[in-house]
Image (cartoon, rainbow, N blue to C red):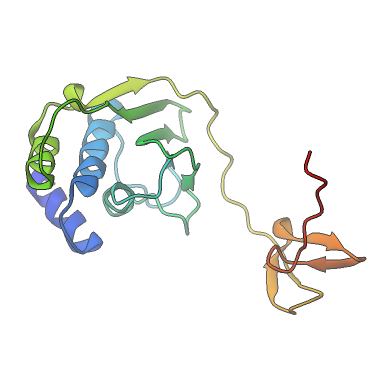
Length: 175
């Protein structure tokens, strides 16, 4: 798929053009170039995204990494950083958007991101965390308060009952 085709596919999925989507398209291009990743039908490729911004949509549609399959993991640091792993080899690469120095309006920033050399817009680093485990299937428990189903690994015990995170009232003394 050409760069233009990737952009068009990402725009169609995301719903509009924007600089954030351009970041995601270029991140995927960089991961393909540097690691040789291909579309992940299952969990062959894992992406850990450190943000929940527009670029993540491009990663989903162009790599096959998704929250539902468990090979797109959200690690909320607020950074434009994306770590890709190949599950078969354990190879990993962290791709971080470089700090932008300059003044461009939204349209020019998008064009710059789409056309600049990937070495100019990203830093490439060794991941500082390990390849995440494969996705697991958990048993559903029933919340003792709201009676909704909840995945067992998200249950808390309160007043002797299993409760969901929404019903759980945390207790803290401010430490």
